[in-house]
Length: 322
Image 1: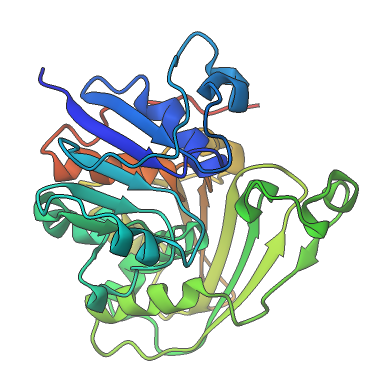
Image 2: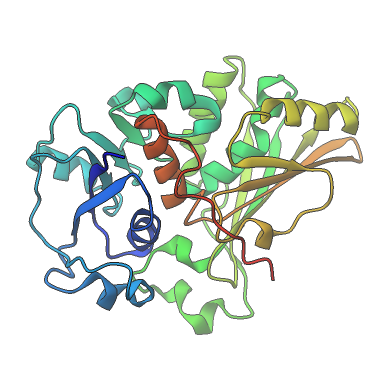
């Protein structure tokens, strides 16, 4: 197999570390270099110690553009546009951005949610990876939006692990704050609502319902749990059948007939979904790993699609289970 010459820009953080863990074992990937301004000159395994024995690369602050076939952009939000203005890659280079900078499709990037955009992703050279909460919420609701079942307000709550806040230390990511604690942030105003609304309108042009989203900081390091519900006149059996039909060809999104828990998805690229009807509401639970299906795993899934590879390549990961 001819390997894809690949670079990671901004590889020192949590999502960069996850990309490294996936790509060093990916059978179609040749990691040419890993970039970090803050860690230049250090061995990758010094910054990500779990990669001892797996990766001998050294972080560089130099950007090589010639001969690179794929670039993962793991820069902080707001920095990717400036980086691409300073560094010009070949038009044939596949760019996969994990920041918020290009998730509005008017910017010329394809929105990288494979469950709705796989055909576009397969021919795209510029891919905007979805946000973590955005992935969990969209995968919980896409079949219902496609069926035009949502006519009223959608109530959504979501709990995310501390890694969702990034590696840079902040008051609300300290162990002493997070442990045995829970808190709300960005009530009804979370930035991922914009990209969610964009996808829903793409899927159903008549969609106009309000989404009331309550995001919580969880007292665990990784994972996202979503609960969403809205008034529904149909039966639970009808809803489950529609969800299974919608996701029948999805490589990583699975509809469970029994109650689910978050650990089923943590450390995997899966989204696990459960649907039930209670008190006239259709209630949907979804669980993902915020660093994998919510970030780096989905980025590799998009990489596989863009290069015509088997969609699950390098992503057959085991959940932590317990």
